[in-house]
Image 1 (tube, rainbow, N blue to C red):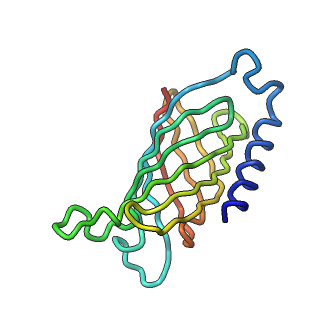
Image 2 (tube, rainbow, N blue to C red):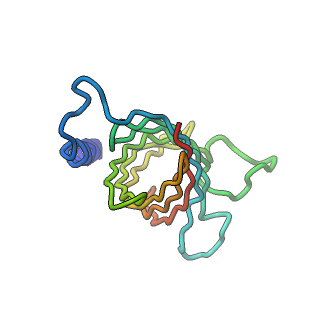
Image 3 (spheres, rainbow, N blue to C red):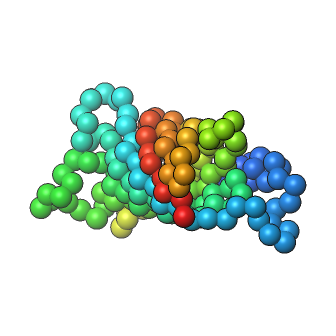
Length: 161
């Protein structure tokens, strides 16, 4: 799995860096931080909304059209905030992303991540594609990805700073 992750990260890097005349060889065109929140939704049987969907928050840095972020979230909304809540329900993920301008404020997105559940030996990968629409410092997007073996549609909002 580590070889596959390395190959995918290299592919994203070559796609995104190949679009630039220079990769920060002096000064980058755009360097900024971001924070994003999303709710990942699936249509899997059994259709229990709280059990199968998850929320997450991501923070990271963008350099030109390549991003690197750290995600923190809860693998299921079931039991959130209850007395039976357990740290093993929460996850972390390192996520790389490549962005390609489509036109105007519309951007295509490729994502690849690797993470795990806190205090467990369970790890996962994420890969997918999406689109975002930018208005001033905010981006509104949707991503279709395979996360921890399930397919998810994730609407999100992002603040760029």
